Length: 256
Image 1: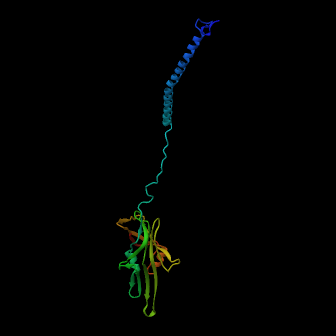
Image 2: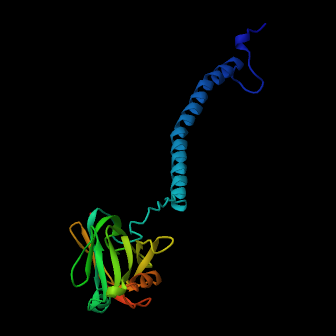
Image 3: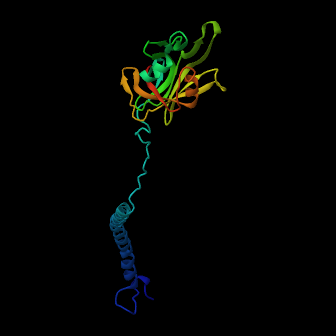
């Protein structure tokens, strides 16, 4: 009877147990080689993945540029030049032409007398320049547009003295002028001669008038003044006037 350790295989002359032993000895080596091969490939895979990610990022950045939102800021260019100045004082001066004043203040002997006088606190010169103190309002320093309020007024009186036959007369008064300067410019005053009592007595030609600003004073000089229909009615109390007749100039010196 043969010992198992001495048995041989029919396929070779080496004992079977020796072949098995050598086969088992090679298994750890093969496993180690597989492990090392796997580890060796890991950095390469990581590098390839990083390279692929970088390439994708570059492509996205190149073809998909970020859109920057535009911030539409309000225009700094003003819609109107200059700025509004609140008026606290100053004066409005109405200077009648010599032709108009000759009809507003004259006499024929002692029989007919026409006079035009100021209503306080307004003042007047003997040559027909009336000055009204400003009480308030607002003007644009560049365009001169706005509104100016003043105090005082004008009284026109026509009287007839026929001696023993008696005397008669007519009087009309307009007070508290308000000067409005814009697309259409007027001087409005209050008079009991009209209903309603506040009416525009004068139209102003302001198209070529430019304000002058000195310190806190805005001045508009030499504005042509023409009679409106109510103005013609009021001043015809003492003389013969017509609507649209130019009777003088207006000057505004408004202080803030």
